[in-house]
Image (cartoon, rainbow, N blue to C red):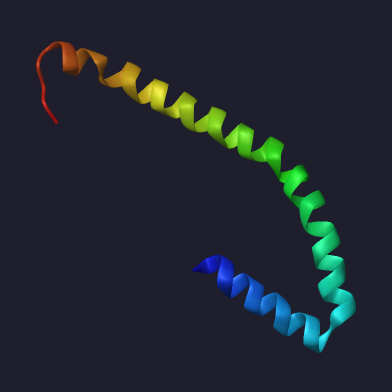
Length: 67
C-alpha cells in the first residue's frame, strides 16, 4: 500500500515539477547505496546491545528467574 502512495506522490510531483521528479528518480539509487553502511552499522550496534543484555541477565537466568 505504501508503494502505491509513493508512486502516486511521484506522479503528482512529475506533473507539478518534472525536473525535480526526474532528479529524484536518478538520485534515489545513489542515496540508497550511501545509506547501506549506516544500516549495517545499525545491525551491528543492535546485536551488541542484545549481547550485553543477555550477558547482564545471565546470572538471573541461571538462578531460575523467569521474566
